[in-house]
Length: 433
Image (cartoon, rainbow, N blue to C red; front, side):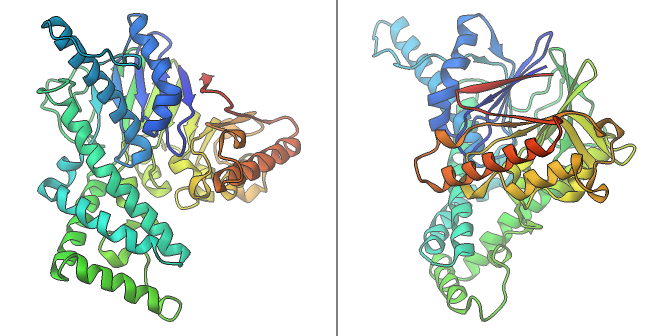
């Protein structure tokens, strides 16, 4: 298998290809990075008579879905151009390369997850976020940024579903290879069989029905609470009151607004679609932005933790290596020959503490070491989707990434040749397993 790791700003954008066929785009990063880095590379597939068998959207966050939306919008503009040209009323030809053909999309559509409440969720989140961003309390500003990101992602997610519809691009959504069933939400099910894409075997390891139920209940709680409090007026008043008493009275920064989280991780993230991909004895674990306990639960249900641990060839480190999504226990139970870190330093990710935990699981004290015998004394490599030089000068992202680069260089020196690393200073990196 081959994994291409694109510059994707703060998000994920990976192209997975089987050695004997099969090609899946795993998330699309930000629209801006899709246009700058991935768009041209992907368009060459069409030039070569190749296609994307599937595009996989792990969840609705903007840094995963907006690049996919950009691809669909590009193809729509090209089809509009074709239509006018073929009907004798030509319009200006698009000034960007045409995307490859897309065989299908794997995407748990937002409306399918929350039903008719989608528009209300979007409106309320969009109204709540500015009030939080206007405070000087760092924790509330962080929450405001998160809510604002989700608010922006919702219309993008709805647009993805609309563009894929039979009326527009007619791209099948959640139609699995070889299946004759009606498309439905993708999740781990007891009777769910692995499926092939070319020479690659895909097994869904998450989310389970429990995570999707939590997501739906969380949104409904949010709407119910907001409506009972006269919607936005009282919601803003509640935010103001919370800010005034901050430091004097304890409250949960995430849970107060009715959106349940899971140990510091928002429900849209724990509902990430996750896969174990296998080919010729090699394995790649795609985790989206899920949380460590949710990933371990899915691996166990799918039979990948039979001995209590799992070693893979490639681990796409979940949620840009956020400290909320990776812990020492996860690092002991899931090890890899290659660790892929996406993200550009936004929100402090990748976290240096997480990078240290992963390193310690390989070469640290005995109590932190990986349980998998395959990882003992074995070389391993860190792959980073970007570099500090690619960030805006003197920005927080550049400072974060410079600190990451310094830490990784120091760890490499301590590793006696077992750790190697690469930072992406071009449009993409290529990882072959």
